[in-house]
Amino acid sequence: MKFIFSSLLFLSTFFFVSKSKTKRADDLVSIEKQVDVNITDSTRIAVSTVISGLNVPWEISWGPDNWIWFTEQSGTISRVNPQTGEKKELVRISEVLRLRSLGLLGMAFHPDFKKYPYVFVDYTTRKDSIHIVCKLVRYRYAHDKLIDPKTLLAIPGNTGHNGSRIVISPDRKIMFATGDAITETNAQDINSLNGKVLRLNLDGSVPADNPIKGSLVWSWGHRNIQGLVYGPNNILYASEHGDASDDELNIIQKGRNYGWIRVEGFCDQPKEKTFCDSVKITEPIKAWTPTIAPAGIDYYNADAIPEWKNSVLLTTLKDSDLRVLKLDKTGKKVIQETVYFDKTYGRLRDLCVAPNGDVYVSTSNRDWNPAKGFPKETDDRILRISRSKKGMTLAKASLSQPEDRSLTSDNGKRIYTQYCSACHKVDGTGVEGTFPPLKGAEQVLGEKTVLLKIILKGLSGKIDVNGKSYNQHMPAFGFLKNQDIADVSTYIRTSFGNEAAKVSVDEVIAARN
Image (cartoon, rainbow, N blue to C red; front, top):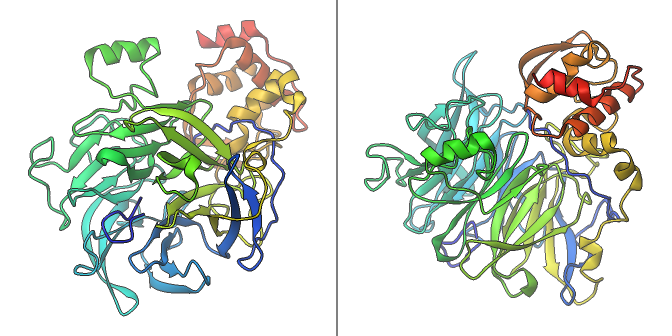
């Protein structure tokens, strides 16, 4: 659990896994009227709304006062009574820079909170008119406010890939996960603090037993960690965003290299194998292709939902679901994965576990890349999943509707749904100011080679589409088969009101050269 030391215990990437929609629960589930859903064959549970109308609750943690503490990406830290929904704002940080995935992010409590009522948070801000920094700041809690901010660390930031999560280790160190700041060389550069898991003393100094003398670096080769939690046997788990492939669940260990940007997921591609033969790489214990955009994680070992015991609980953004990753007895292998609430509540950002086994989940529907049909008027929310005497069977929360055969019969549409629609949207309209539209774009309708080169090689930098400029960091999809690229290129060129010629496999082969 995220708070394990008190008596409480607790770019654009581009993939979107194609799934059938489950039957949607009521848009607003009040505390007074719960909607019961059974999540396992024998255990019945209820889903209820603790609080609504939030602005992307990025981190939620079970607090030292039996309330839920949470950050909102726009710059506020608050706490909410999980039983009544009463909210108290603790601080509003005016210097927070909220832009796309930037803002107020991770949070953790001092392990001896009664004696040292400190809260550690990290956020992005502007150093000047040009440069962005990511700060790790310590606040003191007094009289129901967070006061006396002290900056422990400031590292370079960027318009994306700033991480980041914070946890306190069993040996009372700050573990701080940073993103690569959209700079390819950072993750493998041990002199850079980006693309790392950093380890600090509680006062911000460098621990003497870190793997590199005088350095905060604990592990490296990370792209953009989005979840961090300790599980059994002091194992530190991290969920991480991949690029064009291989979202990851990793076990973070001292002095280990996790491969990015030279390795994505496992060492299974020719260039990756060559690199892994010369450099020792720690591979993930789980990887997802197409990517699911894994977000917050927590460890579950309560009796309330016994079927989830000894599992890493994972929220996802692109797939908009809750995943239960069952571990083996060692905690080092995922032996089963079960998906719940598929697209029922929209994008899910974080979660925490209460001492009684209730699970709290935050939605992320007012962020920079909302899913189709979101945000709702009630977004964003913190939801409670609790054991209930009444309800339906687990299958209702984990089963999807029958597969949409139109996706399997049209390979181009299937590939587009899996790999493209998260950014460019189902109708090809993109996201204003962020992801360019495909409808009517010269890059889509013009010379075929232009579109093929973008798909095969990726795109980084500014691009003008339909008279508007977009700053793009689109990954390369050259790992797809020639037929898949031909089919998806044809689908893009002939859909969304476009009228253009189809793409052949021979044209894909020629574009690869």
